[in-house]
Image (tube, rainbow, N blue to C red; front, side):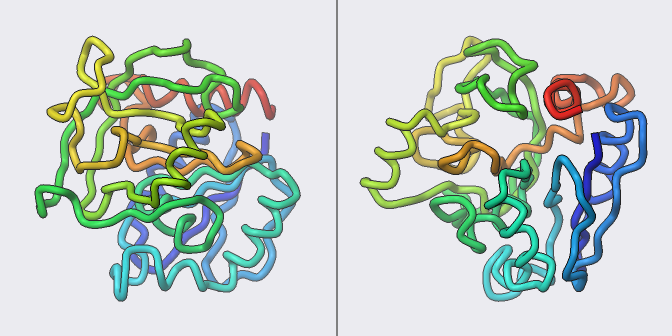
Length: 229
């Protein structure tokens, strides 16, 4: 499998996902600077977390207009899988590749902790390595991770099975207490219509090695390699 990681000014998780991908792929992902207008032929494009452009205007708003994002859109429309994590999720919504927006956390505070997620859809390259309704532990670290959209769009996302993960408790219940940011329906990650674009606020790359305290996140990268490899 070949993968590309987009790098914006202010990215701070680009090297983390580089390491996670390298570990699962057994080869080096390509690091693509935001000013690039071409992305080499790859099987996966990753838009990492961080504070692209210092989060000016809105989180992800300026990055969504970077030259490289025009190519990301083209590749996504061709069916190339695109994974946006945290700020990457924000960038993908701002670019129109995913529905909804990420707004200020309900508690108006930065949240940094491990959370439990329930896997809602295992029929994509991103999630095929998990079991349906499996509960996994993944870290979050964000200030604007509250997923919001209008009622009609929310109903469409739910009806189409495009929710990837939900915040839950250890038993898999999607309670208000388990929701770290106030996201509608405890949504932690969503797919586009074609299910080749995934945006998620939690950071699987931060729990992809035993040295980091767990490997629940590595299953995503191993799954991508197994399916796309």
